[in-house]
Image (cartoon, rainbow, N blue to C red):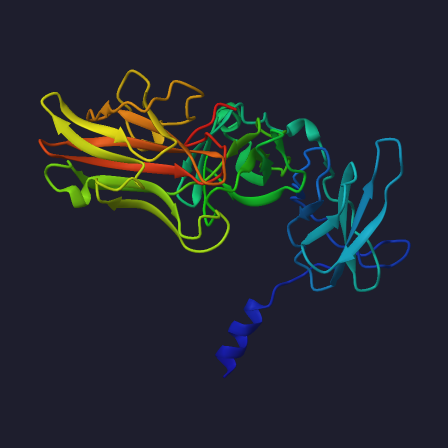
Length: 374
């Protein structure tokens, strides 16, 4: 027992108490390592608050910490708040300068910590461009990584925002929502309603929390799609030679079951197009009244997502040859009187069949299939 007592005695730290010679009040060491991080709000000019952090003062006489601040370089410091933690959250627009003191159990204040100055000049450059890819129930966003590339040691992450988009007036809404944050220069916005246009923006956040100005705005509209659909030529299997992008069971475009990407009989006049072959190859022929088609561009497209805005004009009722790798855009007049657009990319062509990827924009009058040039 005696040995144990000696060991315990050696483990007890020897604290040299320090007192003010005049007041006799216990004086603690000053806190150090004070840092800050402003909290972005979506408005680069108005942070939502600031979070201060500092190193703990290891002294049994410590009771709390006091935070002092001033709003300008010409004003005096005033008490901003008291906390027993080594962090302090100041809600609202931050003051210009802050410092922290330790307070002992008998009320004595330590010397001031290092002070921090909230310097908005540390704000990063905004992302220079923003692009998007329409997907089925989702939007893929990608943007310039210039904020990180210019200040890799000062960069923290990106914030992604969205709001409604009015296609008719070409205007983004005013009620923006935070979709999420990421350290990469791309982001997938999921769980979206097909045919509902949205507007997007991205900002860069510095390690101190400063938010950059927003990227250029970008609108996009998710739409249904399908991959690797097999269609047979009429003379090979007429039951699988027709294709309909969109079928509204109630014919009202508002309620009731909606069917998309339907393979059916090549003999039905309800199909948007059918597949047939002749000595010249395999062809896609518009069928339904109001459906027209044209080849997308003059070169093959890498993927279905490479077909962006539906062309304004140039559609025809004439059949087009199905060439592997090429894209085709269909313009269809629906029962509600609006145009709707569909896209086809030919993945493969056989002697009596074709394999296609397809996309359809359910939003009436919206020519956007993948990546709008906005």
